[in-house]
Amino acid sequence: GRADIGRAEGPGPGERQRPLRSAQWYETEGLRSFSHRARTRQLGFLPEEHLGKPVIAILNTWSDINPCHQHLRERAEAVKRGVWQAGGFPLEFPVATLSETFQKPTPMLYRNLLAMETEEVLRSYPVDGAVLMGGCDKTTPALLMGAASVDVPAVFVPAGPMLRGHWRGETLGSGTDMWKYWDEKRAGRIGDRELAELECGLARSPGTCMTMGTASTMASAAEVLGVTMPGAAAIPAVDSGHSRMAAAAGIRAVELVRADLPLSRFLTREAYQDAIATVLALGGSTNAVIHLVAMAGRSHIPLSLDDFDRIARDVPVLADIRPGGRFLMEDFHYAGGLPGLLTRLAEAGLLHLERPTVAHATLREQLDGAGVHDVEVIRALDNPVAEQGGLAVLRGNLAPDGAVIKHISAEPHLHRHTGPAVVFDDYRTMQATINDPGLGITADSVLVLRGSGPLGGPGMPEYGMLPIPDHLLKQGVSDMVRLSDARMSGTSYGACVLHIAPESHIGGPLALVENGDPITLDVAARTLHLHVDDAELARRRAAWQPPPRRYGRGYGALYEEHITQADTGCDFAFLSREGDVPEPHAG
Ligand code: FES
Ligand code: MG
Image (cartoon, rainbow, N blue to C red; front, side, top):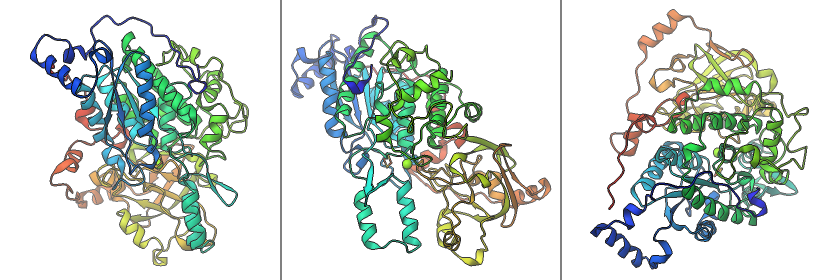
């Protein structure tokens, strides 16, 4: 059943009993239906091309500004082809693009906006099922959050990773090598000519970041959740297999409507537990913690940081992919892709194999015939990249509601470390002053960045990998303990404690840290402790002033009023809560 070998198979248990939702628009007696039919003639379609057929909305996050989704404009044609073949009626809807590279202050500010748009587009138009096209970081959770809230039959089409980067005989990885060579430039080891060549070599095809960043992590999560075609997550964006996968997704969307199988049939707590295990086995991005909690929330499935920490203790890191490992997504695809990795997890008893996916009656059936073709890229259980360590959840007086660290990407000597705090109130101040020798930063210092959480950032930017100060970099210091209420790019690395909750902006303990305060990070004990007694912290709290609100109006004001903290997924409270939404009266 691999989509990448050209089949769109899949059973659909159950036969649809109720009428199509789109019939409300097209097939009632009154004036409205007449008008909708007339306007569909205006679109150039014959009655026999669409009446009585499932309408499949293709939500496309293509944009000229989004290099990761460049190919989705034409790829939507492959989806349409599949929808037509299966007897459906495809209609493409352009929805907001969240371009990780270009959108400021951070696309995380807009994840919930795309989720809202997705939900309302699917609800307000004559839609029976959907194909969701995205992949660049936040687009995946956003599309799935919105679609889960409407609970339509839907298939997700990941944009797929770009080709490997290349420069002077070296293979380059997204993000990771950008930071690396920028540091080389700062240290004076490469010049302008090299930099200009690197600009051309870092990203050389359409597609998402090809390291195990947030895009690859979330596409893989979508695949194991069972809402993509099998193998979809790792198919390179420019591989012909990507077009075949897109066509297969179009076919499946129609079949899911006919079988009346909405997303809630697949998005279960078991599926989310498997998604956590998979993300950890991939050495995936810490951003997955926030997104999976938010996505599960839309299906009213309880998922907490403790689920991540508990599962992380049992799951070995098996994918040897950068930034933690050696290879890239293209190698991972050739090595068997996610189906290959999932056979390993199944072997270890770490998956729920009897649950359904959009393509197969059970995950077990979906993995039939899958395998690993390169044991360097996808390791055997007895030869893991790491026994565990994909993620640890830390708590303590500095993070009462939790914080996370991806400790496989930290130098081991820092897993237990005590050092004096050097505090930066916000990112700009940090940028402007971190190289100032007057701050007295040493390799033992604990760098603390605050004002970078969901409200403080705003939008919880990926500021969590604070730069090593120039003078230490030149001495060869390559990692330090860094704490923040920010997120970190999935392509970043280092001993960075992230997502500290509650954030400093709302008076979390991070707001009370002062320069020189000793802080202890202890990954094995899962603790983060500020060595300042309670009486002194109470004194500091009494003197603390909340920062003024930033947005007087607009989307930013809506965001400020409704955003939740990192440990609950940074959704808007009014979107994640239970509650009825009336169907629009269409006929
Ligand atoms: Fe789009 Fe990395 S910038 S996936
Ligand atoms: Mg990223």
